Image 1 (cartoon, rainbow, N blue to C red):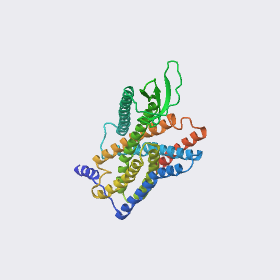
Image 2 (image 1 turned 60 degrees about the vertical axis):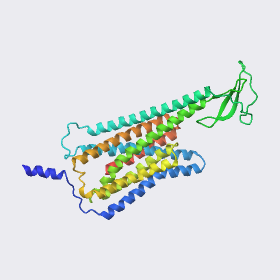
Image 3 (image 1 turned 135 degrees about the vertical axis):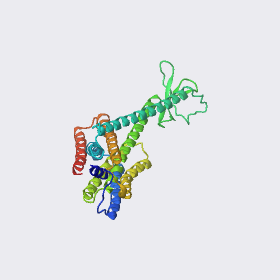
Image 4 (image 1 turned 60 degrees about the horizontal axis):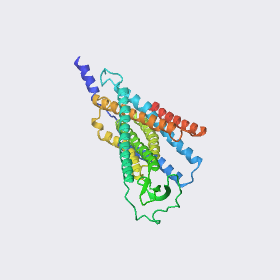
Length: 372
């Protein structure tokens, strides 16, 4: 009776990597790195080329295709790759019998709620900061000191227009704190000038809030991609020689499609500096090769296909990543774009093109999931 139990224990604490071709595995790290870099930087290159030329309908359609294809890829990554892998991992006999069969779904739900909470908190923080700035500007405007030194060279005042209450209004070139744009100057028959910032500030505050939330959602998307990309790299490096070629091809296409999806999201966040965009792209390029390098170095002690601790870790991270990507893809990429963004009132042909692009991205990633 002891022998079978001992065999099961050994099976769940070890793995055997036969015919491990180390030079080939090391070379594959650089191939995946190059493919990832090509994919994630491609949208940035296309955007730069399009910006250098004239705006046209073709330009708009190309950007819609790229963005919506990327959204479809992210949706399929969550539904077809991560969640099924998580259920398979938690169903491994080496974990043992679970009292709760829906662990992957529960953890994915936690990922959705955590992402929602993070974005909601970030939204509130940004809103409060902008309210404080607006209140400070209003206070400064109300207590604006006398400006006897303002001359016609500083503020160009057209002839006053009489109004019912005897006040007159003019337009000056004083620049406000946010927009550095032309603001109104009100003349009340003395040297006190009141800065009317309300309309410009409302536009600027709305834009600033939107840009901040866009940046936050992009960082959340990158985090979700990073979590499962490490696991993909480790898994590829510790896969048996017989199954490695097919898995390598799948990972290669996965990196290309997912890199394009992330790249389209990066170019969509216009408030990011070029340095920050390049940093996010480089992080994506490096993360899967880093996971592959970890797998190569740890191959002799790896027991991920059978170790209960490793299985729990892999299943949890895959489920969590699925939840994060589900929120970002369905809410931030699809709902936001189609309900409130550029495609909200787009023409029928452009809307159809965008929808077909979503379907194509999801279909291609689904085929990869079925192949793997």
